[in-house]
Length: 420
Image (cartoon, rainbow, N blue to C red; front, side, top):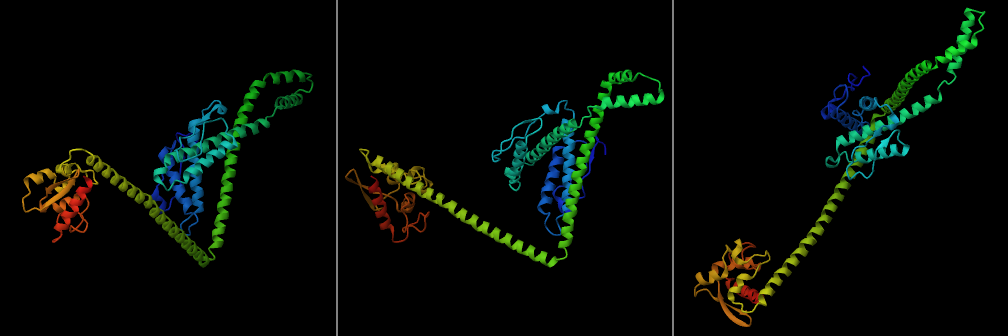
């Protein structure tokens, strides 16, 4: 594989079918895109969840996926920061976090402190808790957080590597070179007495030697980086081997493992049932404030209706047609309500009543005034005012029970009298 980001190829491990259904990650050529890195993160999360599930989890695959993610992040890091002339002045900008992540991150210039690294790790753990809540988890933000942690860790590693190499800088190299050159000169011409002059000549070439030493140090630094990465891979390999040995040892007791798995599943189902019951209780309790609020609003509505009736009652000069001004509990007057087919009482009295309709003696301002209402509208007005219970066939019917017309007129007369 080429070491240049533009031509580097990152090969993913072979995925089992259940992971391919989630995201079939492909080889990455050049600098990985956001979607390619997000895909790796998605597969890693799922693989970590099932790593301990028998016949499904694969610790070796998890390690290979982690290494693939490391390689992709390294390519992105090199493409962005490898050209920095002064790495200690490089500023690393964190992604913007949503409001439900309480950890606050700020820009980091140069190598981060341990507290800053811990803060980023804490932010990642906090944000990944919402991975199962799509409305609160953005895979792109999670990818940027992970890359941000990788970048500042590389900055910290680069600083430490530079400091360690500076401590091993061979300050006496020019002197050693002089002595060796003098020795060689003596070996060729034993009669020379110009050792001091030879030293002066070699010391005059010190800038060239310093440049060569710098190149050597750069090569050593790259070598040390590769060695450290190799050590990390070896450590991972040892962990994988240890895990594999544990699995092999555990496979000798399949019945016990099956029983433990059954017990664990039963515990999970019991917890799930407990959470389900608790959620039902919370749902029931959450409806109580709504019911209480409905009762309160109903009482407030009745109070407002009573106030409106009182205002009309206190008006001087009311007549029987003042009944058209009384509102019901829906805030409607008869003329605008579909319950009474938009009939107002004045029109009914003047155009649709006859002598066969019994009169309503209503007390208005201490004076008895007769009012007539067609029998075919009696039930509609009872329901309009919400006083038809026991007299009509149902809550919205305009039909009065047979034999209940007298009681219906009496109830309506009593209601009107109380209002006026």
